[in-house]
Length: 90
Image (cartoon, rainbow, N blue to C red; front, side, top):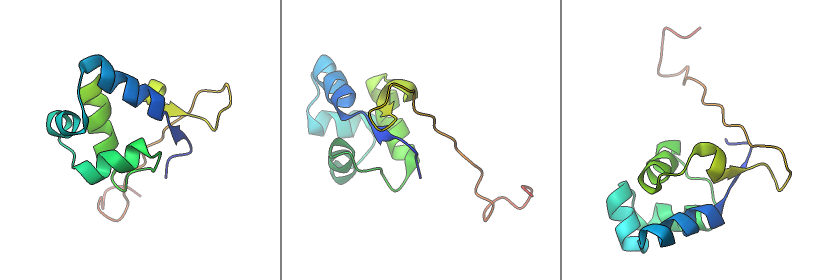
């Protein structure tokens, strides 16, 4: 889980800057329509890689795309290894 909120206005602004609608953003970022709609509604995606694909396609940094509950502090994103899948991680 991400301890931050998605900065939806930043994502929408980047889509407008590139002149991409929903269809173009999905095609260019490799996500489906439902995932993009959820992200634009502020819902964290079930798979974090979908958010990263959108950020990469729209050329948005992680720091710009996440907010920390409306505070002035920058949000932090920590990706921890999945211990169930990686037997070498103790």
